[in-house]
Image 1 (cartoon, one colour):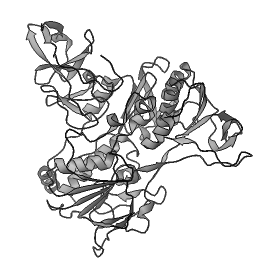
Image 2 (cartoon, rainbow over the protein chains, first blue to last red):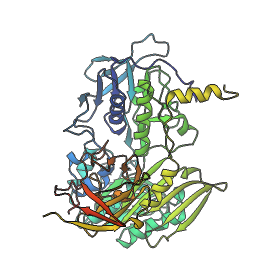
Image 3 (spheres, each protein chain N blue to C red):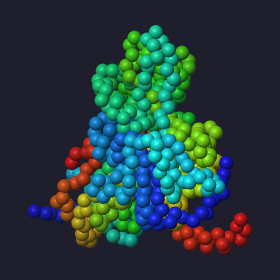
Image 4 (tube, rainbow over the protein chains, first blue to last red):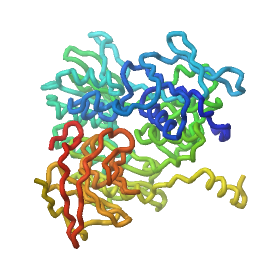
Length: 425
Length: 116
């Protein structure tokens, strides 16, 4: 569904901005609002009892111990943002209505009401996990997930030497976890990726082959291409059950099978949640159905995501959406969204993809080969180049993104252009 | 005593791009801007092990090829997270075709897990 672009007046300079969710999107929204010159108060509500941090390292450097918690913090203690952090307090309800009759604000778990002049929803997503199947050992199967620092800490504090690890999932998070567990000395690592060459469905067969080859070269095993259905306890630890009947026995099971938007606290509010994933439906400025309420990051689905023009869930997407919301809130020049971009580090592969890879119907190996760890892949849709993926090809990916960078147009110029358009609506 | 060394030739540089020089440790990156100026900074992003020489150069700043942080080629300061610390800036003199670099005597800000 689409909303009319709300051309409401930007926030007054003394207005109070409430940001619900202290992750990447929330932090960057606050930063952007301040950078745009907003002088009023900003309050960021975070459910976790720790300062805002960056998640990508949770499956990599933080999990190996190379990076510490302070290395992941988003705010610079030597140059902190001028915001009020409310940590360890969950937000339970959004107040506000499309007709403006209900006051804008949020209710926290402790019963307090916090009024605001704008609310930005950046509550992120929950890690999904496999259902636990019953067994003679009971229902105690508890796979690890990797979503927040607490999850990563639990896995980091577990000795892996000599243990059998099963990783469920074929996305980058699963593969990074498999690589990290291998590097930490796990006795064996088996990945149930749900496809023969992990990533092949989304990124093309050559990329899947390259990823599989790199993992196998380090001893990672791949289960059959069948989907994992459940996990259960067994006398040896855990068993992952695949749809084709194969089981993987392991001491430790890590699930990285996707995430679902953290929006249940918005049920009963006037913002619209998408029927499939329960994400907050927004236009491409992050505006929701309630004036003054915006959403960004993993909990949100903007119009471009709903129409399939952009992928959801990437780190870069959250950062860029935050800048767009900050501009919309403060009336600054609109910020264009760039070509989608993602990256992953697995063993000695640095994988970077950019563009509308999900729209491609043609995959071409431009240079390198899957076996050599130097693949360069071009993606096209109906003959038109729409994306690129490089493995250890930082310069190639940088050049591609640079050529396609969309420059920020001053609002005045955009208005001027619209006025001069012959048949503008 | 500070000595300058020949890092590369001007001919080795492409406008708007960087060149990684790993004959020194930690490695440095030499940039030729579109405007024709030459700069040298530490090559490793202070957030995570990534070569800034592969980054995107614009308005005398380089954007890390992995993430969003950009570093000034003249002061080394960083504009936004995930990086928080600046990179060192090395002085550059172009003598004919030779790019001569004198390394900074400061301690480098290397990312977690990376040693000089």
